[in-house]
Length: 215
Image 1 (tube, rainbow, N blue to C red):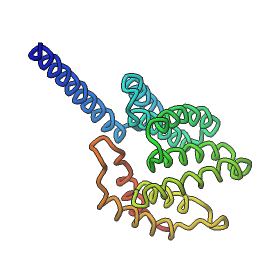
Image 2: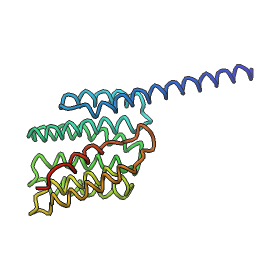
Image 3: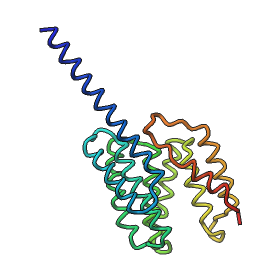
Image 4: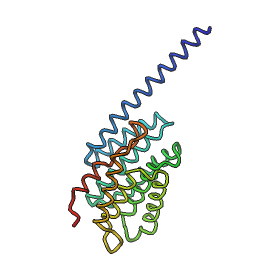
């Protein structure tokens, strides 16, 4: 009987190991695609892929995180294209996955940073009318993200973007933003994610801005 129990236990361990290895393989492939996506449609397809993984891996926060991030990136592309009227719907989709990720992983800097980015998308639909609501909420989430991990380079990157793109009459500065991008890059150079699947995006963006003229 002990022999059969041991065999059964070993078989279960083998299946679990295989499932984990398969999960990591699929996630690694999908995460790599983030860098190659260019259009809103590309990011929508990727968000759908991560959603399918999240539906299977209900105890893991990262699939939900990346589904939310894919929607946020879709929104950022739409914003660059001037399609502000579409941002609310995209932000609402991202919010569902942020909520799911946070229900699994509490007080996580990366998740709060995505929440900040979602609020920023909603603010950009009408900045003048929405700053006192979504703009303030975005700043609160950024503060939380920095509190939970002061060394998170993505927090510094997003702070740099905010300063860089805010008009000077409202406290922005391309020069100060550029300095912060350099600080972000320094943090990226020393940053090591907890696992190969943990968030590790943003370094290329910091390098891009550093190479832009300040005026």
